[in-house]
Amino acid sequence: MTDLPVLRGYERWLKRNATWFIPALENMRTLSICYTPYSSDYHKNEEYYVAFEAVADVIGVYHDAILDRYGQNDLKIKNDTAAARFVKKILCVTEKIQLLVEILAMRRTKDKWRYIVAIEAIKLILRLYLLFKNEGRPLCTYTPEELQKMNNRSKCMEIAHQNFPELSSKSGIRDEENFSDLILMYARHGRGVDPHGDFIVQKSSQSEDSSKPTQTEIVSEIFYLARPLIYSGLRCTTHSKDFTPWVASLTTDLMSLLLKKLATMEKETATATTDAVKKKKKKNMNRANSSRAFMLLLYLLRAPFYQKYTKNKLMFLVALIKHIPLLGSGLLGPILEITFELFERRYFATSAS
Image 1 (tube, rainbow, N blue to C red):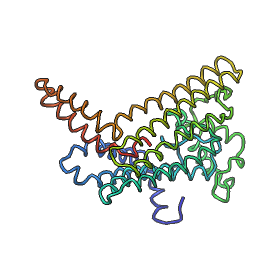
Image 2 (spheres, helix red, strand yellow):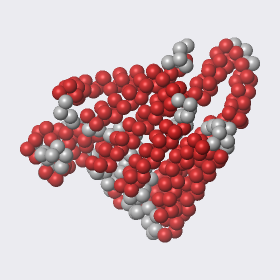
Image 3 (cartoon, rainbow, N blue to C red):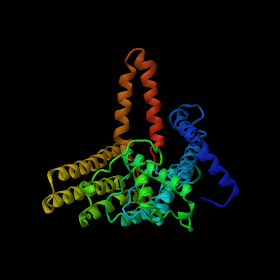
């Protein structure tokens, strides 16, 4: 991947030790997220803890690139060109460091919203480019099954390049056209990872939604992608207790969901497909819409609604739990009280954006 001797050596070392090193790094990051907020010096050293988590996340992206594998946050793009993959990596790194940037801005400057607006503007530009490369379809991540299949394929293509270096592209870009049909067939079915495994027959792709999205769907997705920038931009120009950003953000999300629903109804009436395909499409659309509808619950935790309404209700609930003898007063009550306080600190403007 690189011409630097030090990084080349690290990449070779990682490929030999990835089976234990990557899980160990992931476990350290998980421990930092779950347990360090409860330490006595957390508030004092919060930026250092978050910096470690951000660095671990960025290193994870680098490791995925070294091992030529797809990560959990990789987006499915129809025209997945080299430029699109590069933009996906930049977007992923930006998302990994955004909380650290916000904490540093909050602690070191008086006006953190300028930095948040800059982050959200960068993310919006990158996502709009990926939306264009995806021909207007919603930007979704791979399912665990799809990730397994894609990573098996990448591993097999790596084996093919090692065994047949003379067929590799001189430019360093993987060119599948240079390989025989037999090698490609093994790559597509993961036989390079386990040559003696069962032959897995590819499922028919006829049920996949290959139709182009309507203009209503594209506008709906643009509304959804622009919502974080709208919220942070208005917060930058209003005072902290003003509900205008909160209402504008909620309205944008509701408009996106409404347009998505209208587009779904238009497609159902305009296209003539089999019942099986209709059921699968409807199931996928319902899953996507339900996840976005569930995200609306986060508005209960978003400023200034949280400070004015939700927080008092949660503190009242904690007070009731503390009245329970032993378990409530000695364990659950104090834990919930600390958890809500930490959640208020760790739920930033860039969260869920």
